[in-house]
Image (cartoon, rainbow, N blue to C red):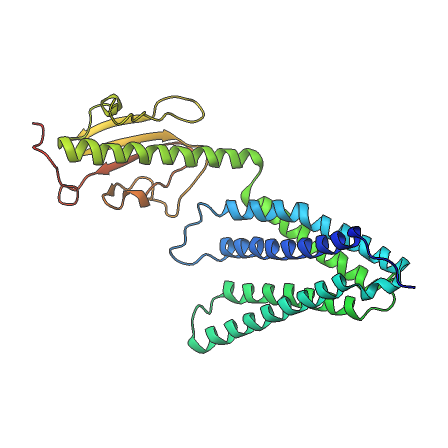
Length: 310
């Protein structure tokens, strides 16, 4: 007599599918970001690389153990009730996974051949990404196919070994991702520095687009930026609550300074080299120290709307 399937069975199988897909996608996103970090291309800028790594790690920490736990519950239930192997949810989930994995493998191989024939992006990181996509999808494909063909749901040393290997690989990825993004303390420091740069950009825009273009001269102090009509509020350091340092250098040049806790730099002279508009936003590199940014406004690019103040 066939065992009766319940709502519990349905949600266990649904949980296995969701856990498997979420873990696989998050692992690939994590690996891709690590590869991008280790093998950067010219012109790449990874100021926000921490965000996708954090999300991927968070998903893996929650969903991968849930997937393992629900897969074990499913195995124990099938071991106790072998007739449930014909359960429609089980077969549909397996065939769906086989289909998605198969299509992914095919697309991955097509992309590899296409790039090879066109000699496009044949870099080390491209081949490593292709390898990991193939490794993940082939592993899922073999796991699903083995699960479909199984008749005995008791102890299987090969399945157990495979589970250990996959778990170690996922754990290694999580650990290395944490090493890359740093501890929560370092993450907070990065967030504070990002806010500092955002504040400096807002001050800079107010100086250029409001003060310079309307008055023809940069302000003598930041207090001159206060405007009751636009309600512009001069931002302060998010941690110390102190005002940012500002100095008027000439009629069309100024200096903004802030004290940072982290290092963001792509070249040794990126911080000290003055930036000329309109490329100033590309030069916010800084060290873990007090850093000043010199800005010189080009009058031919940023024309004065009214008569300048003499």
